[in-house]
Image: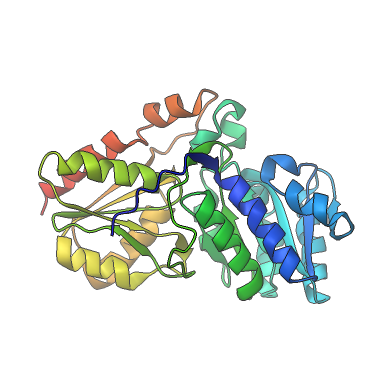
Length: 318
């Protein structure tokens, strides 16, 4: 099934915010927690409609996590959101002990994920959050590919899951291409384009780049399968192993460091069950910088043509 819906561009933070609002409408126990920012992480939608159920605790991310844990233990469903570098990294200790050790249901929104944050620069570009969050016991890690999927994933994470959840999303408007009625299940990947020569497994904003790479490869008579792994933990081993068996080579693509992130999670599945040649597209073990999002994506090798290059490399190793 190929998905190329022309819906224009929309930020995944908008989808997150819409998902929180919808969940809040369906469950009066949903409460929002901010850390001095609301609009820039999409939480303004919830805060405007339910001001009595939203509180900003200031630039005190560790305290926000502690308060969220207390609310969860009191029967509420807290949603805490700030920039991913602060949500996942500055408050790691509190997330580990207060949320994961106690296995309480708190949904964390990690905004400004990836290099595409652009002008905010290296300090605000979350490029290590997947690695940090996926090693924590009891944590679910979700990385939706577009705004539509972000809304669906967020609403379901709040209303249907138990335990702590980390959802990463970006600030910039990106292609919004998936269907409102898509078959979406947390923990199950999606086949977006079938192919027989190689598999491109992507997550987050890189899913669109993977689809673009698939189109470019088709012009060169290379048949690429594209799978969207929107849930990094628990990861869908079945769809990955099926792809490895049927195509014999895999390229992963993520807007994150190549070490410890999504690519590493896929490699762990393969090395245990069916090792095949593999290449990685991601940040090359360095910090980002300030610049226009599209220029940074190009400079650091995170666009479709870079995926194409890795596909050609991996196919030589089959």
